[in-house]
Image (cartoon, rainbow, N blue to C red; front, side, top):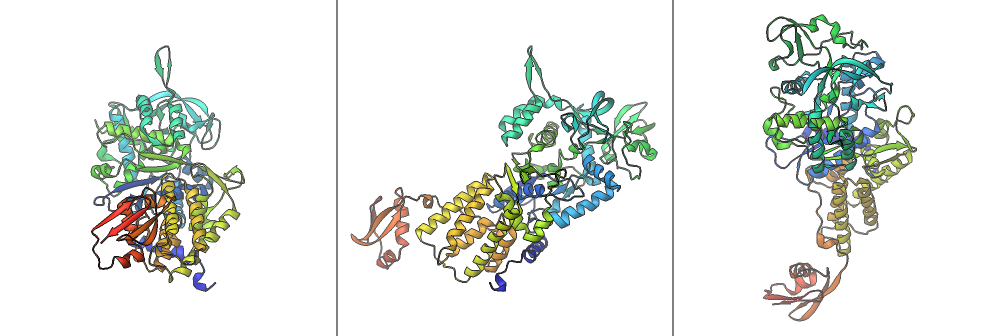
Length: 627
């Protein structure tokens, strides 16, 4: 094989990632662009282990859908950020003996620069958010204040779930089978004064709205079961309890409340936000029921904003599920420092058009997000009460039949596979493992096979690039092409990515067997493959001498008539004399028959310089041109 036919994925992928970044290919002018489409994926915790292959699986599936919608003419906003506050990040910082602020910044840098920018997603980095940024958590605190003002944020004494290992309280939703969902420690009951959001006031509405949502059914079922509507002795009851948001930890947004002996419980005035998380080296959880913030006098001691008396600040921080309950509202307005979300931009881009994520977030994140959205709608801040038009839950990956986890020692690090095989190979292989909503089993042998497939495509295109036929292929080839376009288009919209790739492999096998390739066949193939393998298709598009990115082209459209495989032979006459025959669908109209006949060389020759007075068409039998 000549050197120019060798597919060097490292060079190709680095080149196009650089070009996309420099040209801002995936950025969107949110204010002026038409046909908006908000494509959302769940932002990750920036843990020190980095992205795992399950993240790449989730993100790739969402990215393919976003790329497909962009090729349908939609202006796609596909942002990414970091859910960087909370117990998960703080526990790892404790384990490493590093301040969570330093560790989080380091982890985010690694996630963004060495992983997320290498997997080939069309991320809009201009709208990146981090929940630990003051510019973000100022508005998390603002949301708390809005709920407090209308009586939906209350402090009360209650028996709560206490995790002795994490040394904090947990919401009911964070206790699985009596154990802490983070560390699997058995929780105990403890009576403490805590802050709650009164989500129970929205229980029936949260339940009723599920009927109208275009979401994965298993997620809707999980929410119905958690809300738990029941009737006993003509009294309505719910399983749902108020959302406990207090955390006796350091790594989170301070709850914006002040306690005054004269005025009582006082909200921090909005103009004094944010209540900044203070720097301290004494950030380890105490286990006393108090946050480490309680031991910082310069933070605790303040003055009452109402009467000016000496007062003290609330020292609990809010749960990171509050951070993620509204992040989708912040992305499009991340450049605004004066408001949490721009009203015009929010009305234009939201609700989210497509949200893809894990079913394990069915209750916690998705239920909380719906609640916060409903409250903000009721308070007049946003014009919709459900945040996500469509939600699809992806499946889980296994290795050798077992769930991928550190405890089983079968964690798959995507970095190694991107380096060895390329991001395009990893993306396409992950989507081929099985139905996207079910997952599949990861194997090294399988990914090597996918690499060979992409190499064959690369070599085949370069072999034929200077020998393409400009005219359309024969009818049978046209039918096969349009059947493939139809299959690929329908299955991408249904997230049936494994069957899309199977169809592309089958069609490619047919193309390889042909002696000559029409230009439309080769270009259509690259366009259909582009959402899955964005780097190699971009490279080949440029090799063909095309201007502009392949990712800004229109996705191939199928002709419904060419999907019909049943054909009849129609005799074509000029002034009653047979000149040729054409193959048509039995249901072809006179206009379609005339167009097909005029496309043949014989009819073009016999009608040359003649005026057709009329055409007589007997469906399925004869077409006669009268000149």
